Length: 89
Image (tube, rainbow, N blue to C red; front, side):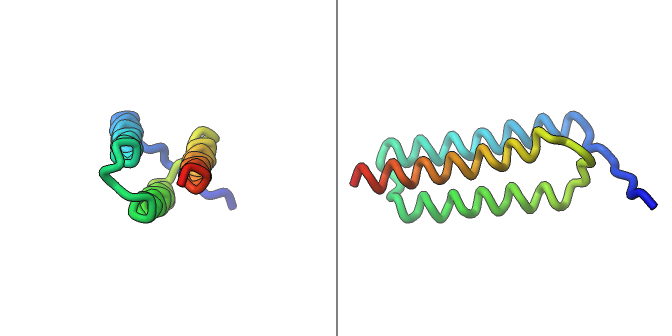
Protein backbone atom coordinates (compact mmCIF):
# COMPACT_ATOMS: atom_id res chain seq x y z
CA UNK A 1 0.00 0.00 0.00
CA UNK A 2 1.47 3.32 -1.09
CA UNK A 3 1.39 6.31 1.18
CA UNK A 4 -0.24 9.37 -0.29
CA UNK A 5 1.58 12.64 0.12
CA UNK A 6 0.13 16.10 0.10
CA UNK A 7 2.14 18.95 -1.32
CA UNK A 8 2.74 22.03 0.76
CA UNK A 9 0.84 25.01 -0.70
CA UNK A 10 3.02 27.18 -2.92
CA UNK A 11 2.55 30.32 -0.80
CA UNK A 12 3.90 28.46 2.25
CA UNK A 13 6.86 27.19 0.24
CA UNK A 14 7.72 30.73 -0.85
CA UNK A 15 7.37 32.05 2.70
CA UNK A 16 9.50 29.24 4.09
CA UNK A 17 12.30 29.72 1.55
CA UNK A 18 12.32 33.49 2.08
CA UNK A 19 12.36 33.08 5.87
CA UNK A 20 15.18 30.53 5.84
CA UNK A 21 17.31 32.59 3.47
CA UNK A 22 16.75 35.70 5.60
CA UNK A 23 17.86 33.89 8.79
CA UNK A 24 20.97 32.45 7.13
CA UNK A 25 21.89 35.83 5.62
CA UNK A 26 21.47 37.57 9.00
CA UNK A 27 23.69 34.97 10.68
CA UNK A 28 26.42 35.40 8.06
CA UNK A 29 26.29 39.21 8.34
CA UNK A 30 26.58 39.06 12.14
CA UNK A 31 29.61 36.80 11.87
CA UNK A 32 31.18 38.92 9.12
CA UNK A 33 30.78 42.13 11.13
CA UNK A 34 32.20 40.30 14.18
CA UNK A 35 29.12 41.10 16.24
CA UNK A 36 28.61 37.41 16.92
CA UNK A 37 31.55 35.26 17.96
CA UNK A 38 32.25 31.96 16.28
CA UNK A 39 31.06 29.58 19.05
CA UNK A 40 27.72 31.39 19.17
CA UNK A 41 27.51 31.37 15.39
CA UNK A 42 28.10 27.63 15.34
CA UNK A 43 25.34 27.12 17.90
CA UNK A 44 22.96 29.25 15.82
CA UNK A 45 24.02 27.35 12.70
CA UNK A 46 23.19 24.07 14.44
CA UNK A 47 19.82 25.44 15.55
CA UNK A 48 19.20 26.57 11.97
CA UNK A 49 19.97 23.14 10.51
CA UNK A 50 17.90 21.31 13.15
CA UNK A 51 14.98 23.70 12.66
CA UNK A 52 15.27 23.17 8.93
CA UNK A 53 15.09 19.39 9.37
CA UNK A 54 12.20 19.70 11.85
CA UNK A 55 10.16 21.76 9.39
CA UNK A 56 10.78 19.23 6.64
CA UNK A 57 9.68 16.36 8.88
CA UNK A 58 6.49 18.17 9.87
CA UNK A 59 5.49 19.15 6.34
CA UNK A 60 4.75 16.25 4.02
CA UNK A 61 6.50 16.94 0.75
CA UNK A 62 6.38 13.72 -1.21
CA UNK A 63 9.17 13.51 -3.73
CA UNK A 64 10.70 16.94 -3.81
CA UNK A 65 14.36 16.61 -4.67
CA UNK A 66 15.08 20.30 -4.18
CA UNK A 67 14.44 20.06 -0.44
CA UNK A 68 17.15 17.42 -0.05
CA UNK A 69 19.49 19.54 -2.13
CA UNK A 70 18.75 22.50 0.13
CA UNK A 71 19.60 20.50 3.27
CA UNK A 72 22.91 19.38 1.79
CA UNK A 73 23.70 22.94 0.69
CA UNK A 74 22.99 24.31 4.17
CA UNK A 75 25.15 21.67 5.82
CA UNK A 76 27.97 22.46 3.39
CA UNK A 77 27.64 26.16 4.19
CA UNK A 78 27.91 25.52 7.94
CA UNK A 79 30.96 23.28 7.46
CA UNK A 80 32.70 25.73 5.12
CA UNK A 81 32.05 28.68 7.44
CA UNK A 82 33.41 26.67 10.37
CA UNK A 83 36.55 25.68 8.47
CA UNK A 84 37.07 29.23 7.25
CA UNK A 85 37.00 30.66 10.75
CA UNK A 86 39.15 27.85 12.18
CA UNK A 87 41.80 28.70 9.58
CA UNK A 88 41.36 32.45 10.02
CA UNK A 89 41.76 32.50 13.81
